[in-house]
Length: 270
Image: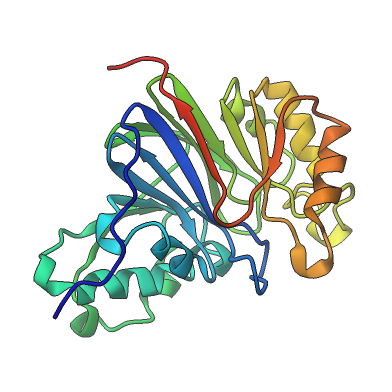
């Protein structure tokens, strides 16, 4: 059996690079997978969430055998569903003798998706590490600080740092003071913005708007705001989200979309 997955593109070992695999909120669209991000530095590749349709997007950049670890913010399928094909693919690449990939997630968050395959069929292509918040641990060159954020399910935001560069990621979250600590002075704040200006009553306290994201980005003093998890199927457009965030944040704003790459040269070596 030959291996046909993509080899990763060469990356500058002196930079931190984030590639958007998908950013649609709730369900994917024809053009946009759900939440998934590939974070790289010094040859280490870390996945942040892997929702609906994010795995095929990953394959445009590298094969599953090149991933070193996975961080999952919470159990909702638009953040975790494509962990299933990712793990199947690693399991079926038996001739590579891959080590089990570490999966870091809130307790029990992975139970539904891992239950889709029988252990005797898929084997042991992973190890599960339950993470709590607040906590700090290391994955390759990255320091990961965890912050509990309000949502319908236990949801953990990640503050990931290396070489003087910090990326803060909310997963899903309602407006909360913890977002300021999560994103304080971050180079990039990857912030959930399900809605533009107003969050409907049914989601209030559990989701943010683009206006909310901009407000917390300003309070945290971030260098750049990237809006994600837009409710695309309900007509929330990147243009509207960006305009809404502009009312509360004056710094650089981008809207996550599949294939978008953000990078920064590391400021210091360790």
